Image (cartoon, rainbow, N blue to C red; front, side, top):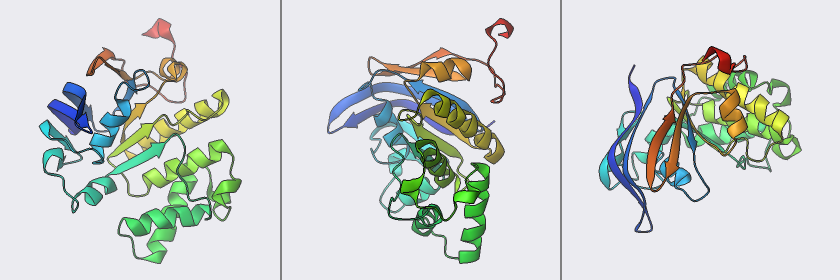
Length: 239
């Protein structure tokens, strides 16, 4: 299994302040990993480094075949086509329909053929169960539906990697569970790896995977559990 993310001996800075030190981390194809830690521990800074918002200046790093040390304004957009990002606050265009939200992202990432755009948009909306909402305005969707649309948007370019930053943070427990099941199921369907930053330990317990804790400026693996079925609850007696 090839690694989608490889980070070795990296130091991550934000505004010249050291946030994370001696970072070593690998994420394999189709693997699911949680990133946990207190607010302000550096989780978001780590994710931002992976998609090129924070540049890596010390250590080694690659994401989806791109060298993080040599990223520039020309190849950052190409890296981001290999990554789908799901945010806590959805970050949808509220003045546009579901379809036009997807078309906006596709246009920004190089799609030009309208028929292919329509086909792919329909595919991802079917994956997340929103095909009947294709012409609805995004602001009219429920919170769970808006996060489903956010996931559909992240899947448009068949990403090697999905970065999910607190994707259930603004949702009620029942909807959070639906979104977790969906995230994992579509990642399996699309063969995408997932790195998910979360505070929601209930989800970590119900849907176990590798767990990386961010604390004291470092990443530490605290648990490794074999791949699981996202449609079955975890039974600790079988571990």
